[in-house]
Amino acid sequence: MNMINDDMLKRVEKEKDRAANALAEKNSFLGIYRERVILVLTKEEVEEKIIYEEVINAIKDKRASLMSMSRSVDLKFLKKYMKLAEDNGINCKLVDAISFVGDVGLVISADDAINDNSDVVIPSIKERLKEANLSDSFYDAINTKISKKHYKEIQEKCPSILRYYSEMSSIARFFGVKDIIDEKGDK
Image 1 (spheres, rainbow, N blue to C red):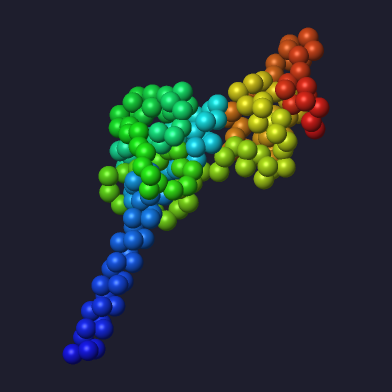
Image 2: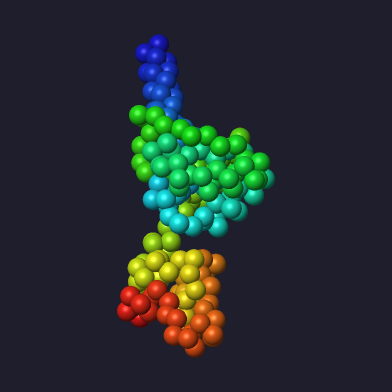
């Protein structure tokens, strides 16, 4: 009889641990279970001046149904993502809770578990530039025209962010226009 009770207690304890882990996981992803999460941006990434291409792709994913956003991020940064979600028929929800942990700013999720074990947290542009050994001036130059030299440098070292830059015209170069990277004296 004691063995049955011990076995039952172990199962109950295991189930309690599983439930506690699921709750902790939910609190890490703005109230969404990890198994439903398609993509996550940190608060810092949401506050950047660009819309991440990965977010656009995630919103267009047929499984996407909800964009949850942290109320601790200023609304002026959330508006661009809210409009994107609205344009693509995805529901938006602003959330906050004392129990939420971490610096998650935006979560795109599905209604059901997607059984995808891929990393859902997107590396920031700054992290990608650092990994490619490109200076902070490249970050400052996002959404601007840059020299052919710097454009090729991004193309070779960090092609995943190339879409955030455009090459300066030869006419602009002829008239002495410099890109931000040159003005800051980097590379």
